[in-house]
Image (tube, rainbow, N blue to C red; front, top):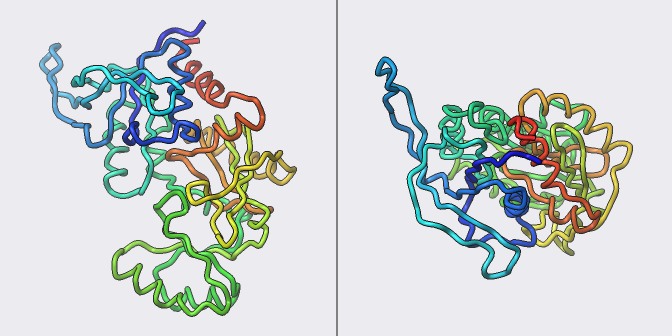
Length: 327
């Protein structure tokens, strides 16, 4: 029997989640079932300040958060119950689940810096420094042999050259999520210049460009890895007339299995994920190509559980408990 853990869950407002799809909700349900005590807070409730350590009066930093004890249940419209708000030293927690969604902006990056003050004394899942160094569309570039032709750039001439070479391309913002801002530019599409003008007028960030993969019409696989090992997969089929397969924008989940190529991809990236403390990761595979490695708040575990009758949240908690020495 695992020991009881004190768990702070850093996430977006729990009031608005979809309890049938939200992976953090599944993790909270499983943690609660195991007897762990849960607190909820949002990033905006964090505060880093100096404290005084009595022995020798040495000053040290303390990471505080205004939290609320929370219990959860799978009941639509009544899926959570809060206790009274209270200030809490996150360094007194056993575990912090870092689960807020991107955009991966300076606020997100700052949160990873703050959490480094308590990790690994308090186990932060995923490791905050590794999350900061591995935004979804950049970590994947360290595995070029697994990717479709890809370019990240600000340079307009480089963009035109890439389009001339590949004709049918996908344009992605680097630090978004859920398919927001992803465009397919077909060979006869005249809107690329206007799209680039609009983006670069609003942002100093580069864009990612990838060759369009027709295999996406058969689906975009989301594979979940726990400590670098694949534990489940779901296929996401784009809606009619839609180039994106994300379930946030109408992608249809379907049962599927891991192919030999999927396992090859997982075997290639698994050691890096383990070494960096990225315990819970979701990757995207279209046809034979790895397109993204999601380390911030990957989704998909509830859909996989329903299709395959497994409990990925339990696998994740098994690893957390083992790392905390609670099992």
